[in-house]
Length: 323
Image (cartoon, rainbow, N blue to C red; front, side, top):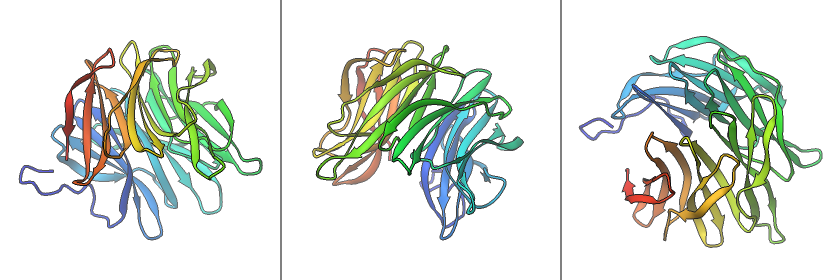
């Protein structure tokens, strides 16, 4: 928003804007989202100043048409990279990749990382110094099983051979990745199923992945007595910070926990929400502490909140109501 208090609109389209993904850079931020219209969906990138002001016009990320959605983005120190799902009406989904300069201009050509699958949940992406890691989950209808996959992407968008990180009965979902200097930590929604009363249950799972193999075996991070979804992962040089939403008969709550480089949770998870639902958390590390933002719903309305957490997993101050 500008200083006058008017709302800044990232584009002039009439579509519904969903699945935002925010990336920080020295100049400010880049925001990607899916714009859903009456008969189309596409992905846009909008640069923002450090104060949130719009910088230039929104850029359409795909070079073609058809349906494009669920973008994940990252900053590599020089430029932005975006991965997203592309669906042609005559084929299955594909996973695509594109780069954009700090000024929002397109760099190089759009590339296809993988083709021919049915995606479940949003992809995750992180930068590793000389390339990227991208993770996603697929569903195989014929036997009702899922796979969670990882692919190493070269600095210019060259996709490698996918690595199968996990197989599961039921549905695996959205992923989140963080690079710890030796391998990627990868978290995903694992084996979502229905109980006898058709209540969805599912855990979050973790694995450590190198560009070519799983190097830390898969393990559950949460129990299956509820539905744990929407994982978000950040690395501070010593520990991961993990955020997620837990859905149960008690409602929807955002939790945060530290984990070591092997994916073992350390300490007691923090419940960040009380007396009101919390959804869609996003965690980052800013060089000194973790921060996690989420959508908070209460009798006063729906707004965004942010909490700060130190390297020991303790909260710093109280919640900040963003808007």
